[in-house]
Length: 240
Image (cartoon, rainbow, N blue to C red; front, side):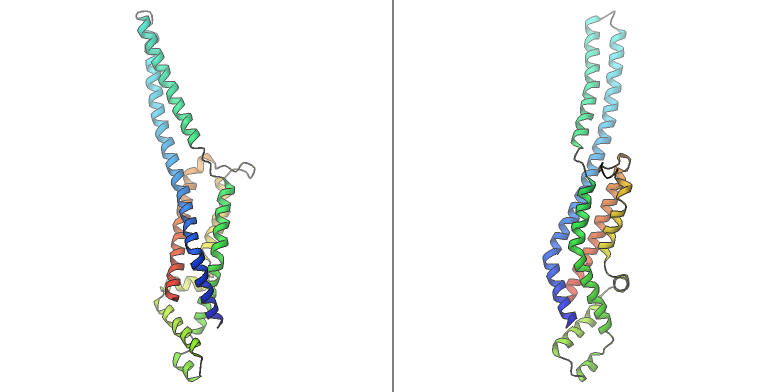
């Protein structure tokens, strides 16, 4: 009966939170995508700005060298050169401004905590269900029938055998032995790494030299969480 109640609770939690968890994962992915896009754009502009600045500088030097001969034309060349340098600097400044979509430590921690709050009850519930089912597998169906077990109990026992027959062996062992709280552990591990990527608490911006690594780490987290959510949905299907 306790197992039956747990199955109902798991079903209710998945109905309420499955899509919310998927939205959180999408948010993690969008953070990584935005960072990759900003880093790529910045790199492109730096290359373009450097080229433009070099061309502008050459134009200015040539203009000054020709000044005694063709005063008017050389001033135009000098002005064009200076303009190109200024425009390159302006573009770089503009990119720096657009990249100020700052990802803060507080925002990331909020995402982590929100996800844990939504997923931990589901994973703990699944852990209890699988542990109870693992215990029930010791009882033979025919023996339960002879002992006069209630129809509901027989139904749960039949479901237990069906679920374990359809579960992947590796996943089954890892869930029943490791506690079945994979997403929670993934997020807690990620939270411990934030000191490596962010500056001090009173300056919660990302360290410039580690932005690219952080983007990759967030993407990996999103992929792992996606796999765990798929597993929860797979178990939900098996239970139903």
